Amino acid sequence: MNVLLTGGTGYIGSHTSVVLTELGHLVVLYDNLSNSSDLVLHKLAQITGQPIPFVKGDVRDAELLTETLAAYRIDAVIHFAGLKAVGESVEKPADYYANNVQGTISLLQAMRSVQVKTLVFSSSATVYGEPQYLPLDESHPTSATNPYGRSKLHIEEMLNDMAASDPAWRMACLRYFNPVGAHESGLIGENPNGVPNNLMPYIAQVAAGQRAELSVFGDDYPTADGTGVRDYIHVMDLAEGHAAALAFLSVTTGWHAINLGTGKGYSVLDMVQAFENASGQQVPYKIVARRAGDVAACYADPKKASEALNWRATRTLDDMCASTWRFQQSQRLSVKS
Ligand code: NAD
Ligand code: UDP
Image 1: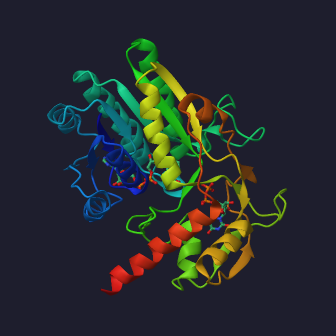
Image 2 (image 1 turned 135 degrees about the horizontal axis):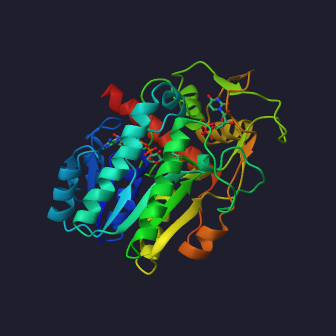
């Protein structure tokens, strides 16, 4: 299958491109490089043993998208492109709606114009809002607590409307839980600009001595050790989930929302401990106030993914920490050289 990955040079897109290439798909990456670098293309070629075609472009450019879909005879699109920082979305909501919602409208128009009607969309567990029960299954009510989450919900609803309007559409909204980890080579991984917002890259930078200590946001949640619990999923498991979604859509039409998570929750302190074990480094931390908007616990019911996609996460917490550490170390070496 020929697959276009918007946002393909980013964290999840780059790992997915490895999995799809290794399965024999022709992968084309499309990205405006607003939050990634084309240096990743060399790493991908190193891992897969072949160059991966890349088009520099914005998803709001429907004309370039249409040309790209036609030129590469694309059969399916995986739509990763978008902005993803919750805090920034509160400060700059228009940017989030422009990149995420307008970008998806342009993509849908381009796809329709060349009759490409298979789409996998990067959604998020954030569409469940404050959990009313756990684990979160796909029938849990949806709601948004910030513009980032609202952009994901709008897009999901838009895709649902498109699928209802034309039975030829095949659409999967994959609701990711907390993607972490890196490809086992250590060549690609998550490389956030500036101070990491997310727990795992922050821990990795503390372990590497780049930051003094981790701030643990609250230890008075109603969880076993009082710190927040999340469903961390290895990015390579997540990448394989996309391959499974493409296979599912090749035999299924309509709109589908599917969780990609492990079903297991780990606390912040579990993560610190696991990272210390995997890296052999200390991760000093201090407890600080809760972060506004955080929920106590959030983890998936992964049953639908297992039944519909015949997919489940297999990698362990140790795999997540060890691969993150390998990537962190390789970054340090490449900065020095
Ligand atoms: P990322 O920032 O590493 O990748 C997104 C890519 O999209 C970047 O390479 C960026 O340059 C590109 N991009 C952004 N706006 C664009 C535009 N207008 N046109 C073209 N390219 C554009 O992020 P990621 O972690 O790989 O996330 C991928 C997708 O998964 C995003 O849609 C994100 O919202 C979603 N998601 C991520 C997480 C997470 O924790 N990483 C969790 C749930 C959902
Ligand atoms: N967290 C923390 N310190 C940090 C970053 C995150 O204690 O520097 C906690 C956060 O409160 C949450 C968990 O780690 O309980 C995961 O946070 P992250 O931002 O990675 O994911 P999300 O909140 O989006 O699930």
